[in-house]
Length: 344
Ligand SMILES: NC(=O)c1ccc[n+]([C@@H]2O[C@H](COP(=O)([O-])OP(=O)(O)OC[C@H]3O[C@@H](n4cnc5c(N)ncnc54)[C@H](O)[C@@H]3O)[C@@H](O)[C@H]2O)c1
Image (cartoon, rainbow, N blue to C red; front, top):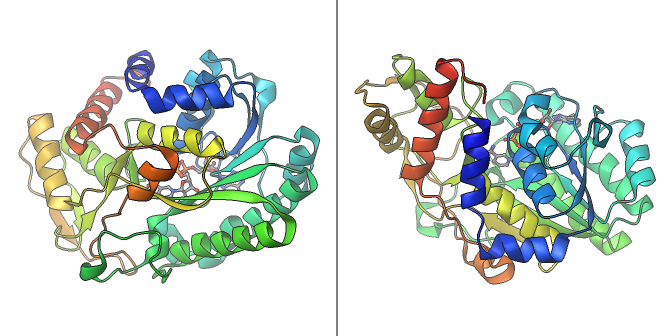
């Protein structure tokens, strides 16, 4: 499965990926959260671009096994440090490594978990980020690329969709608030210390290496349907999301690392998909017709979300390549493979 996925990732490489490779070859980049779902894809993609990559991750939700492709592209055990971004050890590593770029993906990444434990979310996402930014200043890092989130925009009135980067940040969840707070810190560190940044407001990211109960809308539904369970849907299923495929996100991060753009940039598909459509597509791909179970809506979750991606096109030369049907097919295949005991 991993090899199949490496093949798929390679096929998805495009002109913009080549551009990133040309500009990044030889650069030194630290990826925090590099053993996570998105971070591991980013790490592999940067290594393919000839970057000297180091990973910092406490493995709280990340897994070394997700770095399989990265190890095949030259990552070594010494390049991966199991440390907490809130720690002085992490700060010391950044100062010692003195990377050109830090890609900051380490986070408490779950909106429902942040609702249950806002203090933990703030501690990891805000305090951890500030610790890292201070170290970046000390290490004279050239650029921080931050994994921000669509959750920063909160409940956007329908007439203001698709949401642009000019939208006021009015987060409606502790998770969205912690991401928005870090964005303000980034702006402050840029003004006070000249630390450059790009903040990528990621939509709902999905892909084959994340599935099971903790995995987000598409992976959860795919896992339930493949295991012949009725998928559990929060709310009435008519809520919409903007789903973006993980390899597209990794490509956007690599392009952001070139330093040609700055500020906030939406990374999304630009397409609005409702959850019931996901259930239907998963069912069709999996060859199963299973009715969902409806559970209460999660407070703080947006009713509708679709993002304007013109800025990403203009300043990064990026656009998504994987449509939601193709992406869902990849996820369903991965769930099938895992069910049959094939490692992912
Ligand atoms: N998945 C999405 O849909 C999505 C959407 C918007 C933004 N994001 C952001 O993208 C980033 C990556 O998310 P993901 O979906 O890959 O989640 P993930 O949980 O797979 O990745 C987060 C990584 O950070 C690590 N981590 C957590 N706390 C840490 C700490 N204190 N110190 C060091 N490492 C720590 C985890 O072990 C994990 O490897 C996060 O910043 C997340 O908020 C994700």
